[in-house]
Image 1 (cartoon, helix red, strand yellow):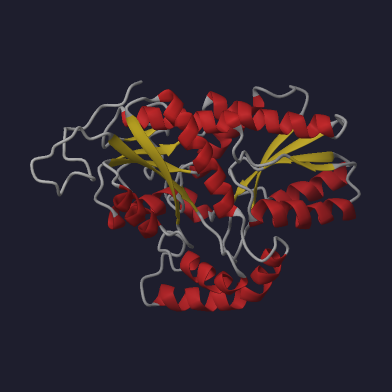
Image 2 (spheres, one colour; image 1 turned 180 degrees about the vertical axis):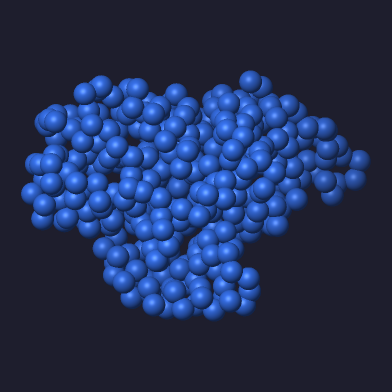
Length: 366
């Protein structure tokens, strides 16, 4: 695909010079949305407050949501600080995202000529916030934007929340990729990470492969959120590249609160492996960056559980990070978005969710 040039306009450098008019190079801001994470111990509690004060996370009206967010963030701050201390005091998600941004700028510039690109990380709950990314893109002189969530599977609690924040912060013309759960390069990148982890451990057998995704309350799914369905599609896409004899299961982690969550839980699956005497290999199917859910929950908490249960082995495939296959997949999505101004589309250029999922990005409830 080739990018569509915008109408000629004065360049930012010459806009104030009388009588000067130059061809404007299309300057596309690629906005990479992600959750974000506290960068210091002092940031942990305000990060938690921002998370739980989001209406997409807790649906209570104000001021009740504000008060509950204050209560939860204060009560969880101590344990959360201890977990972030295990990673050096803060989350690595921003530097991880910056590596992806740098690699994507190179990859897309090789694919598309006559367009200047710059990636802007836009974090939902800590710096740089979505509004910060919007200001930075404007200051850079962006002519338009491609909105690219680093959530492969769409959910109202993640992607939709970030897109809403962007619309409130920026008037830039923008094209949006809402999800990419089954793309060939994305699936192959996950399969490569899984197989490399297994081989580097000596190819132990038999393998029980757990695809672990972040959980959601069941009521979110019941309202028509397509996240769980899309996770299952991702698992099926990756599964095609793996040995057929492997025991493959999908599970969900990071449950909080008393509500019923989608399952089975990753913890329950590890307990099941213990009862069966099975070794476990875990793939973080919904996470593209290393952060607290992978480095602490999977690598420390669940690894300790596996040891207590005497599992024959416990292995964890890495998040995709700046893996070249994944970066190429993102570049392909950006190229697709460039050719569809103002459109919201999935990786196939349209909608991938069945009609039953009314909260799909193309379902009207955004």
